[in-house]
Image 1 (spheres, protein in one colour):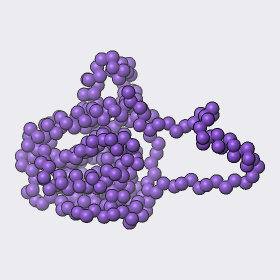
Image 2 (cartoon, rainbow, N blue to C red):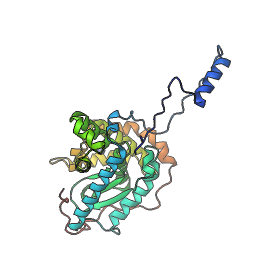
Image 3 (cartoon, rainbow, N blue to C red):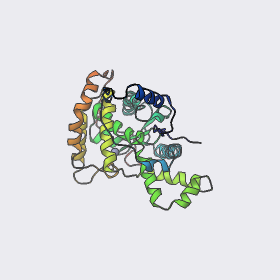
Image 4 (tube, rainbow, N blue to C red):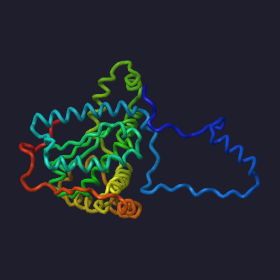
Length: 310
Ligand SMILES: [Zn+2]
């Protein structure tokens, strides 16, 4: 059975835990005395809002399993088209090196991430796109590296952004919302294992690749992603140049990425405003030992001019 990833910390009034017992006790002893409250321990870094309760409609296990299946399918399809970069492709080596630096800082945002089997793959496609599915399944499309000529710092920003969607369970929340509004009887039966569960998993998996995040999710992904990158030793100012490049690439036909990641008009301003919160983290962070270059012209994987079909 599954258990909630974020156990409730609320205490009932009848609670007899040590914390409350002690409070009752000192309350008696110190009644009437002037107590100095400890200042709340401020967490260093960015601030985000509370999770939506819609996330609880679908279990984390279920959605991670569905994502894993979908990811495997995508890999197979790309591989059949010779569009899955081999492990020694310089840009895949680069992506995996950057991911390895960020991953240790993800645990703070979601305990489950310690157990995830994180994966990073590079898809031979001209599309400007990247994603991280629930459970830490990351893919970059070659076009985002090639067309935007991303620096390592900018790659780290995108990766942190995508990881945040998975860590903060934005897909789980969106699907919960969809299900809540789509008449829950059939779905409820499926979730309880009364049939249709397999179809539901496939359905969820299918949705994962086309899921459109909300602007709030986007803003959260920008900020938390920036913090992950800064802690991993990547310059958070790259958030500004990255989105400038993305905006420039959006003239005319917006990249696939922008359709699933809607940006508000204040995206770059919000990133700039939050830079002071992560600059100290970056200043203290160990710098990456290895630096990589963006793709050189004509280094693209062979026969990789389109995305794998769904
Ligand atoms: Zn996003």
